Length: 337
Image 1: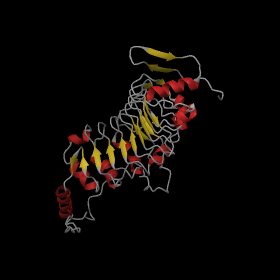
Image 2 (image 1 turned 120 degrees about the horizontal axis):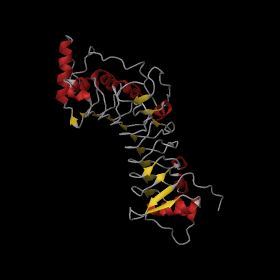
Image 3 (image 1 turned 180 degrees about the vertical axis):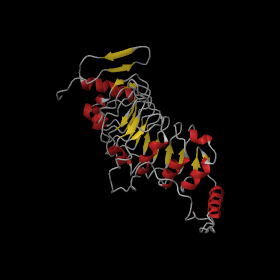
Image 4 (image 1 turned 90 degrees about the vertical axis):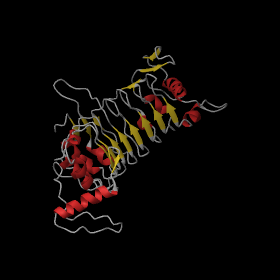
């Protein structure tokens, strides 16, 4: 076999009895360790006469959740045909190694200790769940042009002395996923009003979960919804905003495509009534659409601009830089840094 490099990080896999551990801290044969790890995560076994390389290429799914993995996933480069990976409920500090898997489309890595993504995702990646990790900056998604589902909720980044937790999506990654992303979960990250501006780039979003944050006002959020015409579902529960009056009405008026807020459907007559009321206050006669629903009045009260200069509309063939005035997507107890 070809020359093998030593392990870059320690790897511990727990046996069937979680109280008993098998630790590999000495440099060894990567291929043998990788083979043991792969066999741990699949029920498939090599057929008679099948070469190791052919067997490894045939592995498309690996189930390695809750087995006590630590370090990174560099050993999985020996499974180049891998498409779906379950590694949630471990103690991984990085997903390094996944960049060598060109067919990887789904990664379930919630509830680990990852402090970084650790790899550059390719165009095949469609779904990644990073919920409940320790990531401070989301990077490596600049080439993830097929990513549709991103869960970065409840991050717990390490806090240097005198600072609080912070989550950022770097600009290149944000633009990389903008044309394809349909679902974003950024719940539980102390996200404040000031952090909403860059989400304007994600104009193909259908579902946005920003529950459990520090969003307190409807005006900036309404401006965001106005610029996300494809958004159908919004989750806001647990934000200070929801304790105020008339917030739901303001968001229904701004989100022309919204179908539900916090799981509660927006009835056709509810939006029609609000549009009629807005037209009446503006002194206009509402014009009926072919379905009999009043059209949005031209003088619907405008919502204020987003913080800084709002990013331009996004199309698949246009990757323009975000304005520096908007700054990185950041969350620090609702205070802009």
